[in-house]
Length: 65
Image: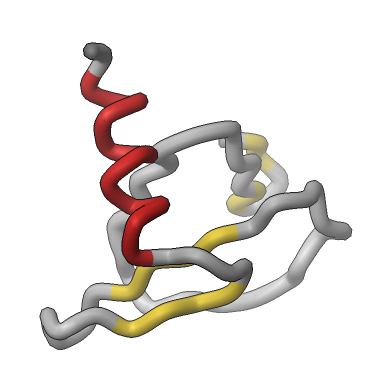
């Protein structure tokens, strides 16, 4: 089994509904979104984002990453 698919399946066990979900690990949150959203303009603390399934677009200083 591909690792990305395995990760998505593991997350699906713990994150049933859309939204942000805290975990027992301090500072670790799991986020699920089933539909494409409008752009959300935010400023975040430095963080690591792992996309387990689908895709994400981040715009930083006019650059699309």
